Image (cartoon, rainbow, N blue to C red; front, side):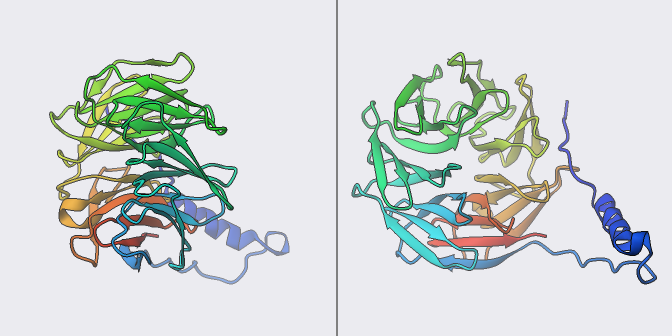
Length: 340
């Protein structure tokens, strides 16, 4: 059964604003006469593309830091980029050469954590230095990373087929995934005390119980070979949403493991995924070089062209201004989608 997202009604918001305007002063005296002007709606569009200073850096994972800057991993450039909303960049070199930084996440203490896919390490970057932590399993291939409900960082070891955990002092634990050659990809911590993980090769979603340290039963997508990629908490806060790249669908799974799917047509692919400040979801359609918007009310899809051709738009993040920022891996850019 479909569990719709929960959205704020635009009509209720406008009505509340009108009420506040009419009673704000003079003990509730009406100010002026006539209705408030209707705001002109913003047509979503890619409003800016910022070229990364290091050439051919292949930007991938992106996140919003607690300091209000946007951070992203430069996989080929071997750097962590830091950017303002106006496109001013600062780059920090990764200590290990050719480390292949990929996934990146911020913690409330102001630090940035990222995976080093080629160097087989997890790194923590502070305002003054970077510390690297080697993984126990050789050639594990760490990729995606997220904050867990226990305050630790959790990451997928795609080559080793393991789920990794690192606490804020650098202690690492690994948990073998029961599904063979699962193709571990995106993961997210959830309020139910679990880490929900994408098994891309298996076209399934699996939950890991943080307290019991056990895996649940993998829940397959309804479409075979859907190649799910990224997973986030849905705007309703009660379910998980994930992209199905090959199937061009949005998957939705309840804590009980019930899976539903929603077509993303006219999109033909769906890679990265993020929730917007407008309670819609946004995804990257690499095949058509577009960014897509998914309505949580009707599940209708709108797409917006990226100015740079074949940009290979990858991951998305909400910015400090609530706009959507995303990496263009092939174009060596970070772009902004304005939508409200």
